[in-house]
Length: 566
Image 1 (cartoon, rainbow, N blue to C red):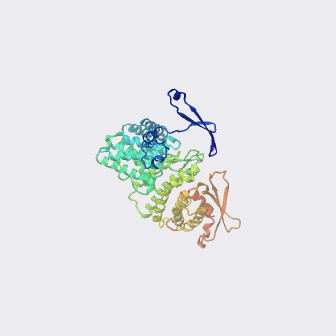
Image 2 (image 1 turned 60 degrees about the horizontal axis):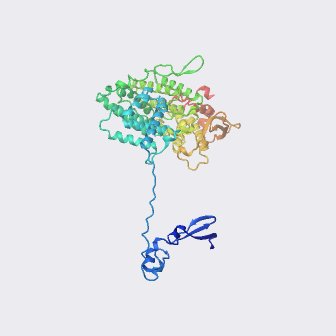
Image 3 (image 1 turned 135 degrees about the horizontal axis):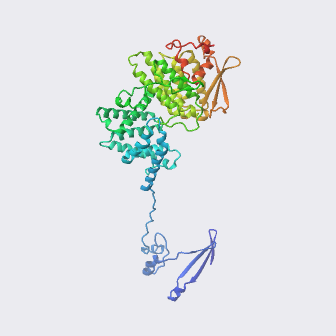
């Protein structure tokens, strides 16, 4: 029999089973051929046995019950109970202990071979490569912090960028476990706790969370002070090596945050374990004309400290381009520049400690301004040699603190604040902070008002086409500019501002825009306006000595040197 249904040709072949014939029974087997494929056709089976045996009624296999039974008022009980569908099984692959151990070994190896040798700014190689790694073998919290730091620093290791069994980032899992272990410790080893503080600072720095890092530095300082009072600090060689690291970190943080954080440090270690003796890095020029940053002298007054810092500023701006990635944390260094800045800060702290009796509002303001200059040079040293304009974004909080400190000093020394405010206005891409810097520039005399006009033009160029810029991330790298010079236009009606875009190198074409003199100056400012190109070069090169030594820094304006005023 051949039939056609739903576009398919069905061919039914009935045949007799030889086995059935031998038993005296004839079972019909049905085969269905569908487009060349043969499938067995289902025939009534044992389900209708009761229907046929009890009532002699052939089951029609209707569902949910036999229609031939129900139509006659009978109950169909020939079907077996329906089977429950088979449950669906999901296989969840959790990290096995061997896999977790492999990740831990990989993180440990990465920290030992890559991270530890690079953390040379604070702490010796013996501390990071020996003491810390040894501590992780007998303390679980140190081990988890090492894994967390490795995960944060290993951007090129996919294994360390994976997620934990709970679905959170791997570093966050180990970071949280370390904090839990530290909080549950009943009588922790002070050396282990201080080591954990340093690793927590490292993790926060890698995440660009400087404020959180400061909290851990303060916690470590309090622990050191506590154990010094109990006279337990001399019993541990590890603590004797950790204490100078906190001293250096606290000096660095005090310079950035404008607070004296070193007053309660252990005197026995903060002085005796310092890496060098009191002195400074002064501007000494060798016969070849190169600036020598390693000549030690003693600061006799505040001007000596300023001259010494200016030498480092000149070296920072003149540093050739470095091809490697910029330093990721304060624990990483920039060749030559970081050591010079650290040395200057250490010696300046010694100078301040020896002149505590010489106090006046003006002198205190000068000390604060020099520390702000040092902070800016620290930022410049980590961005300028690498042509990394986006590197300034990590210092947004520091730049905001520079603004807050300058508000308190603008009435005392407005001229000396000019290079600071211009730096913030042009390098900080936070819309609110950079506009506050422009407003501060306008309060710094005629030179400040001229440079405020230039800074505002830079802001307008970078924010052009950006809808409601707020944070630094709203200004992409492609829209950022690096000012190179300013020139008089041919008609003398304004200035031509020259700048480069990313990647800011010498091969990058120079672009320009016009800056009108209108509303830039008043009648009193006209003589100084001829010096705008030289003023701009001074702030671009962070030549703060031009603003440090005006005839009267307490006034809102100052006379430029003859070479500039000409």
